[in-house]
Amino acid sequence: MSYKAPRGTADILPQDANKWQFVEAKIKEICNRYHFHEIRTPLFEHTEVFQRGVGDSTDIVQKEMYTFEDRGGRSITLRPEGTASVVRSFVENKLYGSVNQPVKLYYFAQMFRYERPQKGRMRQLNQFGVEVLGSADPAVDAEVIDLAMTCYREMGLTSLKLVINSLGDKESRENHRQALIDHFTPHKNELCGDCQMRLEKNPLRILDCKKDREHPAMKTAPSILDYLNDESQCYFEKVKEYLTLMGIEYHVDKNLVRGLDYYNHTAFEIMSEADGFGAITTLAGGGRYNGLVEELGGPNAPGIGFGMGLERLLMALEAEQREIPVDSSLDCYCIAVGEQAEKEAVRLVHNLRNHGIQVDKDYQSKKMKGQFKAADRYEAKYVLILGEDELNQQHIAVREMKTGNQENIPLSEVVDVMKAKLLGGNQL
Image 1 (tube, rainbow, N blue to C red):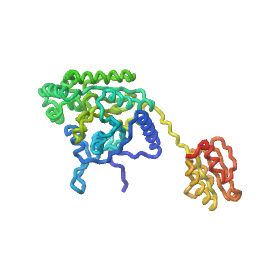
Image 2: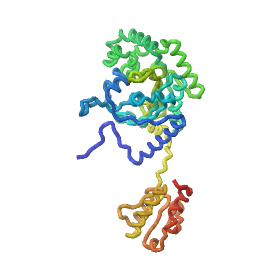
Image 3: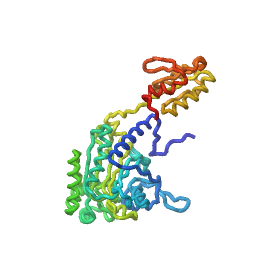
Image 4: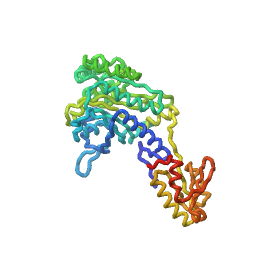
C-alpha cells in the first residue's frame, strides 16, 4: 500500500526548504528593525478561544475549523488563525502589565482550515503574522502596514496593491449595521443561505460573500464610510496621512470588511497584480481589533495585526520571476580511500564542523571516482583528499574545485588553513 500526504497539505522538500529559510530569515531581520519580538503559541487551543476571538458568524468558525474532543472530554481546535492565540497568551501571561508598551509581537506558525484546496489555498498553511497590543495610535496602524509592505518590497516584489478601509468604532458600526439590514432585507430570499443567516447576526459579512458578489444589491449597499462618526473619520484620515508621509500608495475600498468579526477601524489587504499569479490575489490582510483583549478576559488593550501567507509570498516571487539568493554549495567534501584514511576522515570532519566549517563525506563506500562525482553534485568549494600515502606523510591534499589548484597541507594545520580560506580565519 502506498501512502500520500493528506489532501490540502504538501511536503517542503530539501531543495525548496532553503527558499523558505531565506524568506523567514529576511522577515525576522525586518521585524528586528521594527523592534518586534517573536512569540510562539500552541498548535491547538480550547475551541472557545476561536469561537469568542474569531466570531461565531465567520466562515472559519462555522465551516473550516479542525475541532475534536480530547480524552478528557475537552473541545480542542487546531489553530485556524494566529491573532486569537496571541491575544489569549497576552492575557494569560499578563503581558499588558509589562512596563514596555505597546507589546509588539511576531510569529511564524502553521494554520489549519478545512477549505477546498486550490493553488495558494491549503488546508495546512504557513503564516507569518504580527500583533501590536496596547496602543490606539493610528501611527501604529500605519507602521504595521509599512512592515508588511517592506517585507514584500525587500524581497523584490513590485506588482503590489494596498487596499484599505475603515470599519469605524462601535457606534459607527451599529449605525451601518442597521442600514445594511434595511438595505438587504427586501432581497433576503435572493441571497445565499449563508447571507440570509448573516443578515441577522453580522450583515457586514454579506459584503464579503463570494457567492452573492454579483448581486445588484451589492453595488448599491450603503458604505461604512458614510456612517463613520467624527472620531472614526478623524482616525481614518490620520492613518491615510501617515501612509502618505511614508510614501506608501493605497486605495480605499469601501467594501473591504475582512473575514473575521473582531475587526474595527482600520482594515487592509495587500494583493499581487503580477501576471500569472492566479485567481486568489490576496497576499496579506489584517486590521485593528480594539475590544478583542477584553473579549478574551483581559483589560482594555487595543490591538492591530496582520497575517501573511508564506506559500502565497513564494508564489508571488515566482510570478514576478524574482530569484531567491540561496547558496546551495558545500564548503568542503572529504574524500578518503583506505580503512585508516577513513578513520582519520571521521576525526577530521568532526574537527572541521566544530570550528564552523560546513563539511560532508562519503557514507556509501564509494570509490574515489564516485566520491569526486558526489563532491561535484554537492557543488563543493574544496575537496580534501586523504589516502594511505597522504596519511603516512601526515598531510592531506586540498583541491579548490573552481580552479583545480591543489596543494598538500599538514594534517595538523588543515583546520586552520580551511578556516582562513572559508571563514577568513575567524573562529565562530
